Image (cartoon, rainbow, N blue to C red; front, side, top):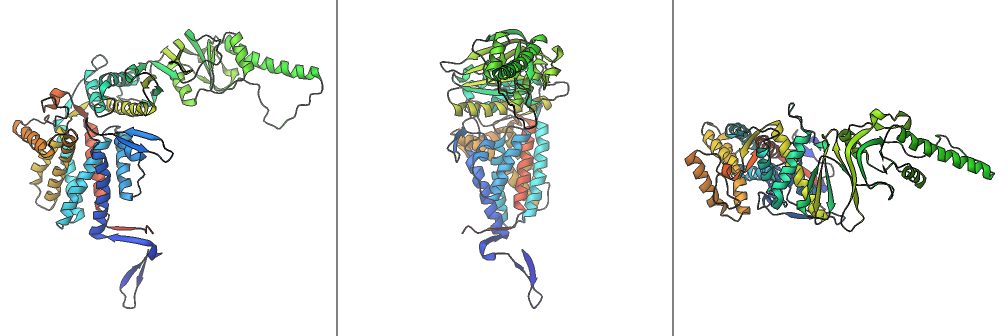
Length: 535
């Protein structure tokens, strides 16, 4: 783009390759951007809440994903429009920061854009709308802190954590087992959490899945599962009080770094060479035996000769174990990863109460369980399910539950779910809007209307009358001054979310409001779109 002047000194803009570009300016650009954002929000709107629908996505190489996790849906979708990509980024940033509420944040942003469109048609300047939204979001975030409720928990009383994780899992495909999965998620997080520092490292939780069995067979193992088997069929399949050598060096003779050639012209020389090679293997195996190892876990493979020697020396081994798994095994067993046989010492061995190989069903699938470890700060959630898609969706659901448990350990404040927090904030923002004399009050009221979109979507997805349900709940909240009244999605007969035990984390809800407002304000400030032509 270049600026030029005609003979009278009037400026005009020259676009490079102008015939290949399309340009939208002013209100048209804003309306086009708002339409793109609303289109993305409309897709996710039906996935919100416990009765939300799932989406089926097919990738270019025909892999099928069935999910109702907002971040996954938008990640898998092939989005061309730049504004729609902003909505994808919005969902992703909510997923990275909080881990839950990825659908709600996009629905919220879509509702804000819809309200902004009405204000733009009335002739209100987009900057004033953005400023009004900013003010309203601050009021809403502060109001959330007023209605938040702190609960105390410790290692013995984990029921509040389980209830909050169950709320997250109730909107997933796995909701029939939500109690069991919530308990597994909370126990896993508490096993690795540092409660004094309020810190949780989710990398220490390994989520492993295996097709077969049923969802109820999902279990938490205080140790590590490795998707490998013992290298020789005649080696022992169960080792008690195991001392584990964790190696990143291969069981094979060293290779010279230079190019070399070995000339063998007699049988004796070949025998000598073979003997030398066997001695290398012998020394390696003996070194492991000398330090007292009863199990060898190796990052690299080893050939049949080394395998045969290990079996004869009664030293079980596992080969081709990945680097990440080796690190987790080292953390769990208190061992050290050894890069050279010369550095192997008894102090570097990991210790585990039980190492066993387990076979599944009629298939040849086997996995190794390393349990009763010295340091149980590395745990594994082992998921079973009828098919691969079910296991993948369960992994995503468990991830959301783990993130919620982590957030509650960091900040133990909760707000009530079922749209009650949004309705309460809507009422507060509506009341506060009257204090602003300028045009911002219209934007603040529009923000309050947009907050109502979440409970309306919940009611709609549950098969209730959306407007009627919302007005009844809102009236009840104002009349009783009770911020716990929400939409009764599960048809239990009460609108009291406290009685239904429907909770959401405070920081997750605050993040939703702030992120949605930021993205909408960014979209509103765009008034000129120059893009390549479609033809």
